[in-house]
Length: 181
Image (cartoon, rainbow, N blue to C red; front, side, top):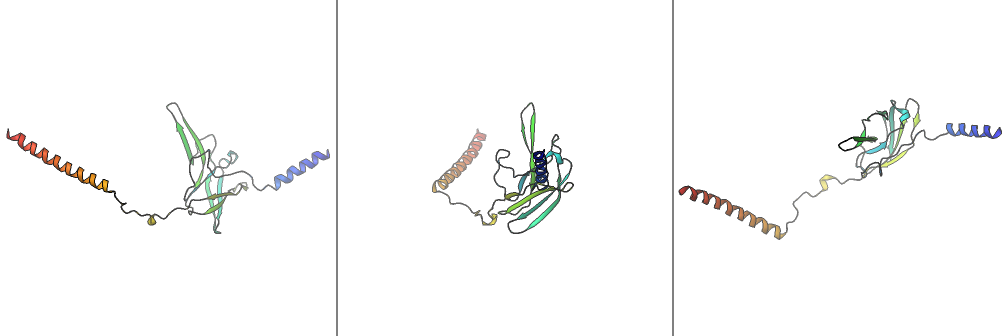
């Protein structure tokens, strides 16, 4: 009897002292073929038990900037088509749609973010997800000038231009001589 009471008390304490209420992660690997995005992160959706509830998203980056995206989205039902990031595979008989996750956009390239879902109605929180955005090159620094041309390319272009001119002159001469007969 005493062991049952101790076990029950430990379970109650573990439930009250939980650090997170549900698990979230960054989508990658087997669920989505994509590299690290430059200005957005795709997170898995909260579990179906939160269907119909609003979700807030708290974040802070490695520079100390933080934010709270209130009412980011409503947790969609699992049995219905979700209006978030989806992947479809179809053939002539049927289409399979999988609901993947929520895409947080307008992030700064080259930063690491700590993200956490919060369900305001129940105060449930996800684990803290660490996600990074890719460092990108400024498009102004890309050399858009003409690349060097090889001598062979120049010779072929000149020969083709001369051949085209000879062909056009030959067609005109043939048309003029054809009308004289």
